[in-house]
Length: 159
Image 1: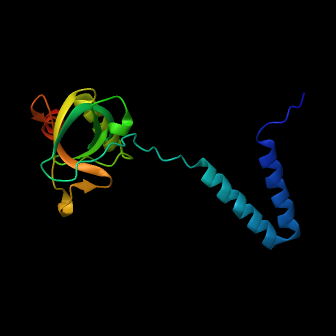
Image 2: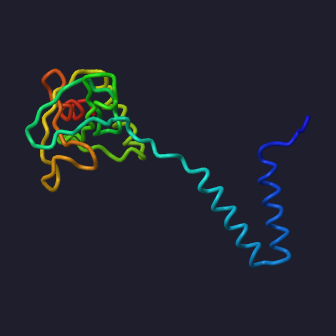
Image 3: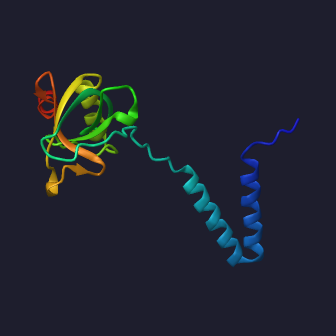
């Protein structure tokens, strides 16, 4: 039985680069640089795309409703009538601005939005956002309500 590990080829490749560096510094540096770049890019985490693929309302005032089926961050979520993500509408809350998800405050904001809205029925109305557009970054800008209250207000009240 072979006792080699999956790291062995990388170690051999790196050792070859060091040998090449000793014989030909220019080629050795190039090989080591490519190895470093390969390792850095292979460690990069893939982007997590949201599953919402439904058709977005395109005009201010259009109304839609459904269950909050997905929370992307502290101010975006997906509304859907069915369990099929191809029908879910991705929403950017018009009345609440959360910190970016990669920050501690952003992760807290996402957890708060999940607590307030996930799995609950929401009624939404498309609004114009910054720049007067209804659609921003493949999301509809909307005010959504749960039990008659704006999700933005619910989030501010629970902070």
